[in-house]
Length: 409
Image (cartoon, rainbow, N blue to C red):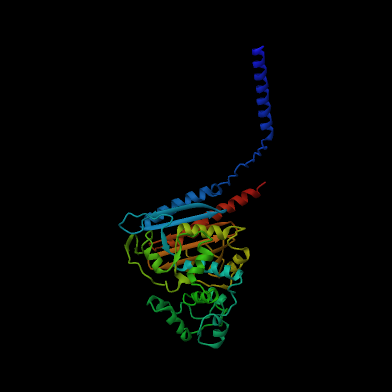
């Protein structure tokens, strides 16, 4: 009887335990399993132009070797991707520090393209209108005649339509005359036309945008450029000014010479006093990101309206044939806001080149094909003028062949 009682109690305990376990399971909250969508890999669009990239890379590598170029770098963007980024040579002749994607070069007049982008953004944000008058922004501003003094606008300054004789006071920049002093002497410069009527390339007049920017934003030009362009465009190596260039440990040194006989020059601060026109320092990585941002259709960093402001031609620029010596049959040459615009191979191409002692820079983009290219070198020679048209010729030829093949029945 005692054993039966023991077994009975044991059975009751087991049943109770099982019941408790079932109840506990029933009271557990239902766990929701989140379905994670598989990550969609974007196609590698560079494969579409693989043959073009291979041929161009081969040509450029051979040219760099043949010309004895000390150092350089190239980037090509296509359909919102970096299609090619390649660096060549060294930072300084006779030394071992290689050029890499973050090595900074002087951009010289390619700086104008970056200033143009800043101007488009500030205009779009209603901070500085292209039609603001210079006299309202630059204290004591005076030109040789009253009409020009009172009607000159930001648009005229950034499109080289000031009416002043070309390259006014570039000689004073090279002689290190302070920019503020040069401004006081603008009243002595001869005027060829009223503002807006004629193209005449300028560095001093273009750089009045610095003072305009300070007046309108109450910040230094470099601060505004960094806030509106360098940082949002992921140009992490970019800066303005000689001091920033000099203290950067990863920089390309200037060289002078030809036919492979280049010698290293001392770092120089020529044209840094005209920051908007020629004072930007940047790496090939910076220019790749710059191109990607500009070419992106729905960019959150620059609006379509800003791009329209920047790239709308303002004036015909009748440059000599030698300027486009390696371009085949340029049909029109105009100047927009900090950019040249040309009709080439039935496409609209925005372009600019830059040279300052010891450095060469080139940049171009085509919205029609979502393609861009930039080239930097610390050994100025004939190569700089060939890089952009050489690539565009190969690229446009392939595109045209592909389109013809698509039309065949």
